[in-house]
Length: 463
Image (tube, rainbow, N blue to C red; front, side):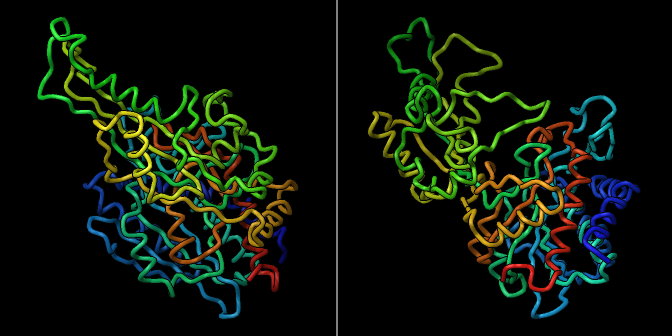
């Protein structure tokens, strides 16, 4: 038995169709957590699909109810081989966003895994069923080769990530000892580039909020009242424009982080962002001046207007509308105080003459920012394992540009967090035609088999 044999076993699992078969079964379960009618499917994914698969690998499984109202169930699986061995906590989510049936291109069904060339199409293929299926396939390859893992594994699967991970924090607070580990190693999100293995060490935070201007009870004829009445759309547009300059650079001092440290800059130096053949081209002159594209998305904050409405866009009339509203978001990094994000915005609007603009936190859309130091021993250990497998160093991102509930693992459970994504930015995640690249999946199986093998080597892993 050897490391090379375990990697070869993971590749046989892919080449022989085992991975596609497992993923096809999982994609076929319509686990739409945004759809209240799919609660039975969320439970079926854990109970009927994942529990048997995990028990075949010698993991003891327990279904746990969600401590939050209307939250989906959880599954905790454990294989404990020795108290003195390193313990890894892994994570995945079995829920997906709405399937958007009828919006996929001809020949594709969100609930049927379809391979075309280098792409596996299907809802959840990239987010997140394909990613945790890769990790479990690699774990099985090590078990078949070595006969044991040589370390302890704990797995937490949730079914509500796409609705804000309701109950995840409470569940981890209630089960700290049960979920205790040396490190979190999990997979979600995209690689920096499709062909380059990537590690990220946390996530940007996300805070959604609403801005509105409500000036009067109804609309008034624009010919009779134009020039006499404030237009709420114009007022709100100027208020929003005050938050950044014309090229998107943030003007609110409290939203400008002080955490672009030498170790973070060193990790991001030379990294090139590639979106893939279907992705958008980058706007070189957008965002904070003086930063590289990698520093802008992984080391800095970004303010976005996600929706803006005034009047009736579908049927405009010649009237000054009474109201305007916008749904906005700040993606922020470590170094910005989340408790002061909205108060700082309120102070900024008032200073600039926009006291009539109302500000309210959205009911959803909050994840805290986290970041593990790129010099942490677990980061170096994981990077070395990946390089040993693929022959090249992975990209190391201090944090992902997007957001995940990583703060639960970093802050509640107190774990160093190492994420190894198996997707890419143009995977159509959260859109029709979601897909996983077959070439990335095959390489990811080898990478994870190498990591799991190395974890079982006596004295190899940091403690």
